[in-house]
Length: 206
Image (tube, rainbow, N blue to C red; front, side, top):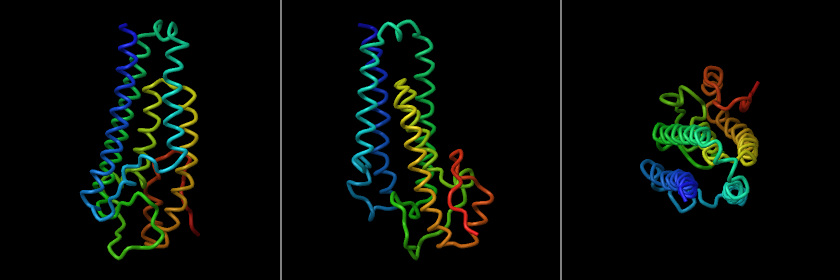
């Protein structure tokens, strides 16, 4: 019974992180971009792949607990340490992402913009002085952290690969647009600050 309570506790923490992430996406966006807020900003069903990934993580967690019950019971303290590591990554990622939203203010958008808004400004201060894409770095850490928290080895590998591929393409497209918007100012920014995600260099113009 104690082990079952522990399983539900870990899964409950995961659900808390998941619920807060989606709720806070809308809340923090509404602070500066209320006119752009819609149900889509909750990011609940923004792609079939995301829903599939969530489903896979839940299935892996409970299948592991069912078939590997004795293994998990034998490494209680190690499991706890891994759970804490995952939780720490989720918290760090969440805080970093929300700081990015607040710092960018009205310049932040959940969708890549290919047409420059007249109010659009290049933000290079705050967390944007650490990474060119702090919101993506935060979500990357949060995403991987959830699978470490759940101790889902298969989904951990899959999530890491999927998010890397997703952000590699997205950052390339976004930076190509930003170079078009801000020209040399953005090129200088690229030279001074990294994207924040290893092995992703973004769009390099010549």
